[in-house]
Structures are given as structure tokens and as C-alpha cells.
Amino acid sequence: MNQSRRTVIAGAAGAALAAISVGEISAQAPTNLAGRKIVYEVAGYRIQMEFISEVQIRWTYLAAPTATEIGKTSTETCDRMDLRADLVLMAWTESDKTHVFDVFDFVNNIVFGNFVWPDGKRARSQASFVREA
Image 1 (cartoon, rainbow, N blue to C red):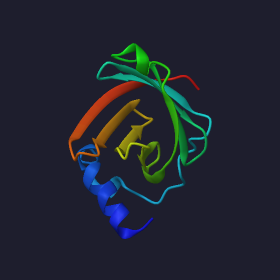
Image 2: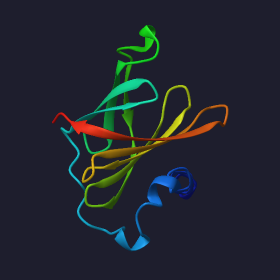
Image 3: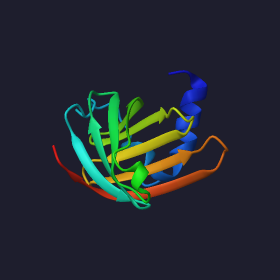
């Protein structure tokens, strides 16, 4: 990962990372993600997130504010940073150029989301998730 990409990841995910101390970030063995599946609700969406591999996810809208969005899905290849055991940052750029930075806390079953839309608008979210696999 190049330096400018690291800076973007660190900047956009800063709010989520503020919840942990710098001393907790370590070079532990990576958290095994492949095969995990979670579901969470945020901003009127019910989202299923499947971890296809250690750096690839597939998200699907199980419910959405508009009927035309239900079932929408995409597979994303991610930049990944293990912050500590069971705390993983995943970042990707969607086809519409939206930048997504999610931090998955598998100890507390919480996902912290940070988004930067193509027009530069930003948003953050936090949601509890349920593990399906």
C-alpha cells in the first residue's frame, strides 16, 4: 500500500480508531476473516457482509429505504490493516468512487463505518452486528 493511501485510511478512520489506544495496535497474527458473515442495520439499510477471503468482501442490501436497492450487491477487494486481534480495518473504493473505511470489532460485534462520497461529503456510522457464520 502506498503512503498516500495509508494517509487516507488513517485520516478517514480516525474517529473509529480513537476508541483504542495506540499501544493496543500490534503486529499480532492477522484475524482470520475468510468465511465469516455478519448482518447489521444502519441508516435504513440491513446489510449482509460476507468475508470471501482475507482481503475481499461481498456486501448485499437485504433491506433498503427504496425497493429498487434491495438485493443490490457488490464484491470489493480491500486494503486491510489488523489493529489488534479481532479488530480489523478494511478500506475500498466502490464503482461510483465512494471511499469506504470500515473497522470491524469482532470482540464487541460492532462495525464503525466512514464514507467519503465522490462529491466530497463525508459520513460516519456505528452499528452492532450479528454473526451468521
